[in-house]
Length: 322
Image 1 (cartoon, rainbow, N blue to C red):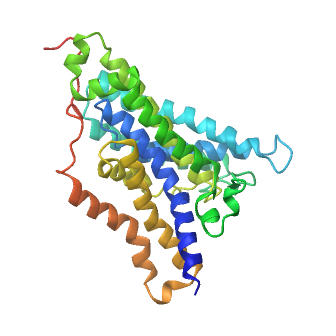
Image 2: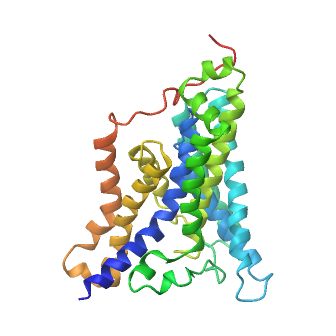
Image 3: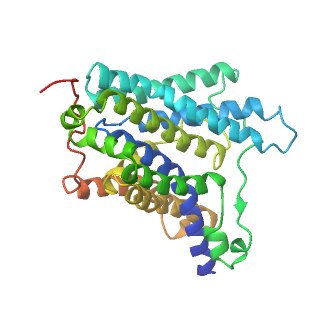
C-alpha cells in the first residue's frame, strides 16, 4: 500500500472537508466577538446549502454547458440568504433581548423544516434537489500543482477552499487592524464603555450577526456545490455544531478557528479514505462515521472552562444603561 499517496490524499481531503467548517467558524467568530451567542450556525449553513443548490439548479441551464457561472451565482445567492436568515436571531437577541441560545435553537429547527418543505414543493415532492450538473470544479495552481504528492495535497482544490483561507487572513486584518474590528471587539468585551464613546452597540451587533449568517451560509453552499452536488435534509448533518466547537477550540481567533476546523476536517477525511482504500477490514465503519462527533465532544469537554470567551458574550445590552 502506497502510504505516501494515502497521506497526500489525507491532506487534500482534510482541506476539502474543513472548508465549510472554516467559513462557519469565522461566521460564529464575528457574532460572538460582538457579544451575541450564535447557536444557529447549523441553521444558517442549511439555508446556505439549500439556496446555493436551488439557485444553481435553476441557473445551470441559463449558460452554455459546462457552466462555470451557475455555481458562483448560487454561492452569491447563498450569502444573501444567510444574511437575511440571520435577522430573526438578531432581532430576538439584540432588540427584544431574548435568550440567545433559545433563539439560535429555534432558528435551527426553522431552517431544517423550511428547507425540506420548500424542497418538496420545488422538486415535486422529492426530499432532495436534483443532482446538479454545474458545480465547482477543482482548480490546479500552475507550477505548484505539478509538485509530486504536495501539489495534489495542497495546491489542487475547490475555489471555495482558496476563498476560505483568504478570508481567514482578511478576518484577522479586519478584527485586529481596523477601526471596525476594534469597535466589534469593544462591544463584545465592554458594551457600556463602547456606548460611552459613541459606538452604536446595537448596530455593531446587528452587522456582526448578519456577517455571521453570510459566512455560515457560504459554508453550507460549499458542501452542496462541491462534495454532495445537491441538497437534502442531511447535507449539513451537524457541521454547524462542529464549527461552533472549532470556534471555541480556536479561542475566538481567526487562525485558531482555522486550525481547529482543519483538526475536525481530518476526522472527516479519514472517513472518506477508509471507504476509498477499503480499510473497513481494519476499523469498523460505524466507528469511523462517529469520529467527527466524538472528537467534538472530547474537545468541548477539555476546552470549555479553559477558553476565555468575550466578556459580554450572551449578555443583552440596553442602550444608555448604567
